[in-house]
Length: 526
Image 1 (cartoon, one colour):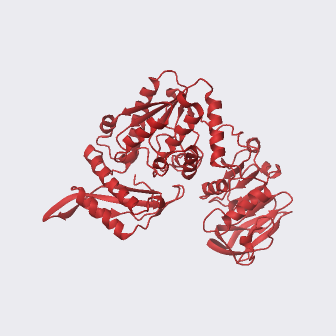
Image 2: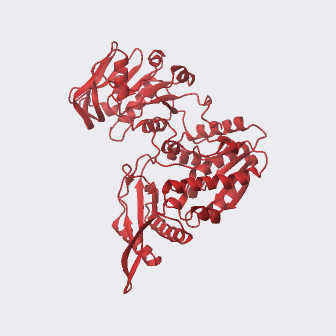
């Protein structure tokens, strides 16, 4: 199967390539560049120069890495990139690599620097030409390194030094190759995005052409080009933001040649299925099909407790139901789905990424389905998807809907799944979401939901001893779901939610609140 938009992106004229050496902030670099209005793509560190050159990049960024350039197994990029005439910026490990490869010296530092570190600017041009850096002697940045550049390569100058007199930035202005020891992409480096912008605009000469409107125009044109004038596309709808944005892109691109299939597995939140069905039927020009498969999914999940097994079963059942319905629609060549980049990362389909959890819409569709994939959002982060959706005119009821796992409430019920447990969890979750909304906090949170644990505890209701399940509440703040912090909800709000859940749902004995960030936890419990 082919993956739409993983092929040529020549319709986007301006691009920066990021070579990923496995650093924890590689995705964040991409986000910051796109936020600056410049399109970028993340490629493996060992991508050949010939392949990079085909992208016609305006600039190249070398990411950080947990490795040391002095390790025998250290990752290296194609040395031809240094001779390609394209501006380069190395970040942390990327700076060490530039220094070592071009004739400088990198050693293990006598003093490691981790966290917020002060530095002074030696030469403002071109990375520090910004009002933020007017005070050249009291700048601050986020460091995370043990190695340091002891000697810069020929043709390079020192642009900044840390308070420990360690080289913090280097540059070869003639060849437009630069390196910074710190991480300009993280929030903890004040003015860091200004450094990236100076590289993008001053050094690479980029313009701010990456906008939601430009993405919509490119995606619609690409869908039309790939699908042609006569082919039909079947779209897998979940009711969430991602698949809805894909549907509205298809609506603009091919109108009534799109067929939308909503497989209702019964694992959505309270009343959610009815809401999304109404929206799709009213707004989309193509044929909308609702498949009620609740009983089938419950039967397949009976007695299953292992989280990945739940996901596997739901994915397999989804494919089975979807396949039967899609193939009954006649000769269809393309399948559209709402895969986004965090799905790809967490499913381990990017080189070097650990499998955190599987997603049934990533690499899970069997070859015999016979469809070529249309995945226009595959390289977007969730917040970018929302911006694109707003550009397409999606209603706030969809755009502001919090992220929801493909397997739905099945992974928010710890242990086996029954119809009774689903009803209980839907009620508890609805109470929590209603009170958060009433408190005016819904738009400040990335996700907030209830979990039905497999723990039962003793309680007292009326004058009787009661033994029942525990509901856990989870609320997090995040930008892209790659990391998340637990939300400091007001105590009176938590109290109100607890009183309502234990009072309105007789079976529930206790309510607890999860205060674990990601990492070390994940946003979902399973």
